Amino acid sequence: MSYIEGTSREQSLLFPEVIDEYITENNPVRFIDAFVDNLDLGKLGLVRSQPAWTGRPGYDPGDILKLYIYGYLHRVRSSRRLEQETQRNVEVMWLLRKLRPDFKTIADFRKDNRRVFKKVFREFTLLSRKLELFGCELLAVDGSKFKAVNSGQKNFTKKRLNKLLKRIDEKVEKYLRKLDEADEKETDVKTHTTEELKEKIKQLKERKGKYHEYLKMMEESGESQISLTDPDSRAMPKSPKVDVGYNVQVAVDEKHKLIVEQYVTNTVTDVDQLSKISKQAKEELGVEKIKVVADMGYYNGNEIKACEADGIEPYVAKPLTSANRKLGLYGKEKFKYDSHKDCYICPGGQELTYRFDTHEKGRHIRYYATSACRSCKIKRKCTRNKTGRRITRWVDEHIMERMQERVEKNRELMKKRKLIVEHPFGTIKHWNDQGYFLTRGLEKVRAEMSLSALAYNIKRAINILGTQRIIEALI
Image (tube, rainbow, N blue to C red; front, side, top):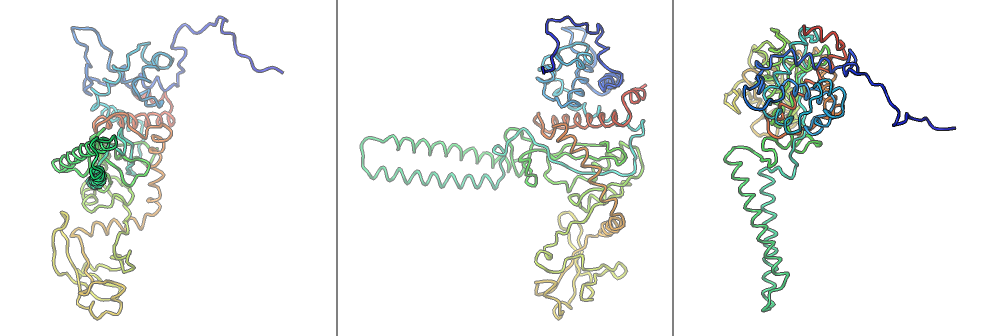
């Protein structure tokens, strides 16, 4: 029995004479071509959207934009690999009409037009609205850490720098002791080991000088850390898979799991991000009211208040972070607030009345206490403070209590969060292999993320409606 045999390399083949015959009617590349041709490149602000009257003719920016969208749609992001695709990929040859821009031209386009890609992403959002791909009723918000072009070794915090400086001082002290021991030998000729020790001490002092410069830079900028390769990137302590990176925020619509809004920040936590992305997503959808669900990492009174003021109904689970609970004492949730009497009822049935108010971390806080704590039988379960238990209340705490009631009544809605928002992140980071950025700087990585989100939405829309129907909507 023989093997399956291929065709002889010397045999003549009759390929189609027209390259268009290689591209099927439902090929996504046809949508990319039609989508970009339908854009007003000048209005979007693309560099050289109008050709110059003098000089050598350049490439149409629309063609390079098509190349980038195609690349991110097919997990090809680097300018050098995109250049290779123009020489061997039939789909790209069809898309660019056999144009072959070099990698420098391709890379410069992304750098020069980094603020435009977000606008292109929003143009597709408008098209998705026209196709009724958004439910416009429920959004899920979440953040995920994406790796930056900066290793953990090139990132320094004040704590790490002080530790390194202490280690250097210990090493220098150790080497100096060895030099003193060498001097006690009273040898006229300096040994090779002595010269090596002096060189090591010199190098350590130079490194110490650099570390002091880093500390000075942090003090002047007010930052808590510094990154050398990508200055805008930050260490992400709660993300074991990403040492140094960026925090990507997305708002995803429930209906088809399409990304409505996205942006990149270098803040380590999500606690201050809810209102910003929720408002932007609401504006993109063009609705007056909408529900937003997020995990407990977004639990922040000021953010919840800002959302409600803008017609957004937030659903955020309350984290149990009470220090008393960790000590085995009653948490604040055991104390019930009576709005009519403006007091708290403790587990022992006593009333904690208002005593004084203050401002803490930009919030107006009221304090409640009772003198009954001193003779209370269950005091040891409640507090270790000799004067008794005190309860704090934000003046707008009723907003959080109202949201907590909504969360308790809509447990099924809270379960939907993961099903909605984890889908795009899983696809982008694992299936599309875009869980890391290739460029440096906040503006450039935002451009990359806009392309990744655009590619995700295009692929998702095509899977739902098909290429032809989406192209028809452009007309």
